Each structure stands twice: as C-alpha cells, then as structure tokens.
Length: 516
Image 1 (cartoon, rainbow, N blue to C red):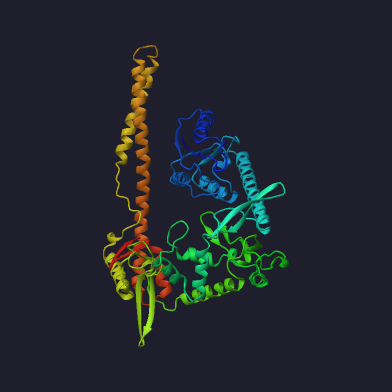
Image 2: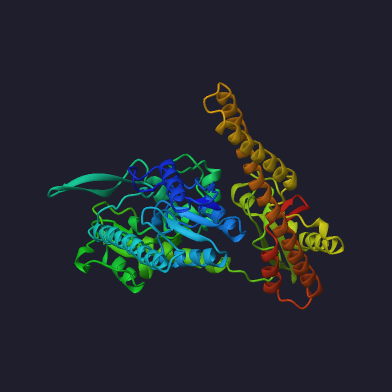
C-alpha cells in the first residue's frame, strides 16, 4: 500500500506541530490501522509557510498529480486543516480522490473516508474549518475598516512622501499619517507635470532624464506615478472633494468634516485575492479625513484625475495592426507595443520596445521595426512548423532521460537483498556478524531511497513528456487552422489564437525566438 503523507506547518502560529512530528504521527497511525499491509510512504513536505487557503502549493500540486496518475492508495494528514481550509476546494479535492480510488485519512480527527461516517465527519469538519477562517477574516476586516473611517493609518507601506506617527488616544496608541517635508517634493512635482500637460509616459521619461528617483533610489515607473497621482491621501478635504467622491459612489464620513484643513485617507482601493491584488473601483472606496496637511488642492487633484482619464482615452487602440500584441517582447525583457500613424494619406505601423521609448537608448538600444516585417517573420516560422512539427519548441521541454525499467530492476534486486539480510539477521541476532548485517542493510536502504527518488522523478518526466507530445499535436492543429483561415479571421480572432498557443515571442533585432 502506497501512502502519501502531506504535512504543513501553520503560517500563522509558531507553536503548531512541526512537519517532522506530523510525518511521524502519520506513519505511526498508518502502522496501526494498516498493520496487516506492507506500507510504502511518500512524503510531500515542501509547503511549510504556505497558507492553507492557497491551493497553489508545490507539494500539494505534486500530491494531487500523483493521485491523478494512480501512484497512491491513501492520502494521510495529521489534521484536516493542514491540507485544506475551504469546503468547496476540499470537496473538489476529495472528488479527485474518489475518482482514482484513493482513501483519505486524518490522524487528529481519527477518521478515514473508506467508511460512510468518516466521509460525513470529514465534510462537517471542513465546513467548520472554513467558517473559522471566514469569521476571523471578517473580524479583522471590520476592525481595519473602523480604524480607516476614523482617519487612523491601518498599516503597510506609507504613501510616497508620507510617514506615520504614533498618538495615544485614551488608553490605546494609534498610527496616523503625516507629511514628510523632506520627501514630499516628488509628489508635488508629479502633480505639476501632469497638470502642465505631460502624459504618464512622458513624466517617467522626464524623471529618468533628470535623475529623479523614488525614495528607495530606483527610477519611477509609470505604475508608481499613476498610483501617486490617483491616491486621495494628497487631496485637500474641501466640499469640492466631498462632492467628487460622493459622485463616484465612495463611502464618506460627515460632510462637516470637509473643512479644507487636512488631507484624506482612502481604504479599499485594492482587494487581496488568492494570487494577486486587484484594483477596486471608486464605488468600493472608503474615504476618511486624516490629521495630516493636504499636499495639493482639491481642485488640482480633481483636475489631475481628469487629465489621467484623457490620457487613457488617447491610448485606446485605434488601428487593428500587430497580430503579436500582448505576446511580443523585447530582448531586454520589456513588452513590445505597436504604434500606427498616418502621414500624407499613408499609414505607417511600427513595433517598438516600451522601455526604450520611456527610458531611452541607454537602457535599450532596440529600433522601431515595421509591423509587417515582424508579422511576416512570425508567419514564416509558422509555415516552417507546418512542414515539420519538430520545430515546435515548448517552454517546458525537458531533455533529461531515465531508464525506468533499469531503475525498477535495481530496486527489485535491492529489495531481495534486504529480505535476505533480514532472514540472515533473524538467525544471527546474538552473533558478532549481526552488526555487519545491519550495516549492509543500512547501506542498501540508502541506495533504495535514492533509487526511489530517481524513479519518482523519472515517472514525472515521462508523464510530462507524454503531455508535451499531446500539447505539441494540439499546438500544431491550432497553427494549421490559423494559416488556413488567416484571410477570413478577424484581427481579434488572430490575436486571441496566437495568445493561446504562444508562450513567449522574443524580438532580438529582426530575429524572433518563439516558444509554445
């Protein structure tokens, strides 16, 4: 019987059971409930520090892959919340177990899913684990919202040009934002530039050309500049500001607090998801009045938002050119974008490096290249692949090879040798030869562990290689479809199809390097 053990130390508590303790408890428990079976253990123990609500854990993904590949009979955990803390995700995971005939055992809760009562208890405990997490998250969120609504700083990195101070209110000490007069000049400069007609890209180039860096010493990027220019923390709390945020659906305090004496604080601009932070619309913002001085007038802040909106409209694509949009990257690693303009009734379209345009040729010396030149290079490469599919280069190609049958044969011989030594030891426990037999067994056991690790890697590579062959066939069919229907497909259809099959497309001068 092959048992997969999944331990995980809590990311929140230092006093939770260690990974080694969990593994040992699982092995001991397995020895009790499966005492009549020969047991083989596979331990998936590289997820220490990962949260249980995150399913993108390396060892968890490896465990589920082995379940799907039929390599496990049982999955065992020390406690249910080590593997999942969400009923929906746990249900999907257990469906996978059932589909592949794998039992699930929890040591702490003392149940296994081979029995009806075990399955029932499992779902009840999973539901309570999720309820506990959601209640904790809700309490933390409510507390943070109450702090934000009262103008207190809820923590994290301070906005550019700001610092936090501690003030005692009653028996408790709270944090508040204050303007750092030595650093706020950057923010004032950015507002001056945007209001004088500069675009964000032009502001970035201006800062780079004039050696203006962030407080950490790095060049300001467009995303940083945009975040500064849209942050209400710098805005004066006037009635005009109240009307602006009210119009955009923000949650606001009493209008009487907007007296023009202080700056504002926003809460809820971003929502942290499972994998990344997501920007929220203004209707999800909570605006409160801080104790810090305003950095720009409400009129200037609102005008800056209008200016940014105009820039967004200008950047909207007007021409359907450049089928490699969203896929093509420069050799420096930056994205390649397309620019189209009309001169003397003739349309010109070029691909160029966005970083080169913003940061100058000292950063990237790439050139403006006609769109048709690069698109033709790309299509010619697809035509070459159509003739010979072996030209398809997958991003995750693995060249490592193993002799699986040879490893299995070596393992079989080692197991036979170990069994022979065990029998020899049983008849020689009091003999001086016993220590030599035990020494040989320990040596063979180490060799066995190394071969088992090699076998697992070989099996994984073989599975990936099979998947790659299937993937290559699918990619080849998509390439043929694109070439056969290129003249009838819309621009969007071509671009979406290319995005689906191409992982990377790197432009080096006028040479393309494509992986699928």
